[in-house]
Image (cartoon, rainbow, N blue to C red; front, side, top):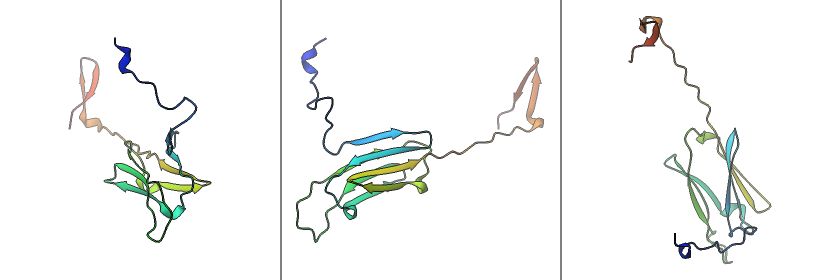
Length: 127
């Protein structure tokens, strides 16, 4: 195996690149957090695209005269999330987006008339 192709990360293990987005998973939700120091709350956009993608980006106001770094990240959302419950907070230069999980229970009911007894086994007919 040729190890000359493998390149070490340009960042030491204790430094993350600028605007690194941290993703965490809890039993109740998915959390996305990003450091955006110096960015005003009005310049941050959190959007949904096609109900499958979460987009976090910054936009400069037209009246702003100071230079601003552009930032944009797009994430594919996992299955079974509550799109209506998505929330975001921005405190001390850190944006936190909470995407709650959707807990939908599927109740499977089998009518007793659909049960088949054969060779001592119990099974149900397919619909």
